Length: 117
Image (cartoon, rainbow, N blue to C red; front, side):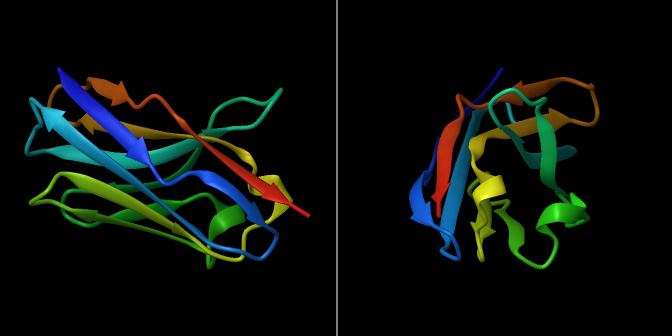
């Protein structure tokens, strides 16, 4: 089992910035992928950004150039720096940790990000 604890959500104005954090504990795996997903009201959960332990990155097109995902492998912590926020970024953001070696994945409880105009 892996436990994920997220922090950093909140209310921000359009154009502002927020930084999300997620710390994994428990049976973390050496071959893994860490990522952020989001779910807006009435919409499906979508991938925002992911990063492998080796540093390979992937972003959804709508956040490229505005969001930066990073991780501290030693601390099993994931970050998402969100700049130039838009109202359409409003959603609950979920941390996801996936064992690539076993195919299992785990989810955080979610943190609300609200961007007001």
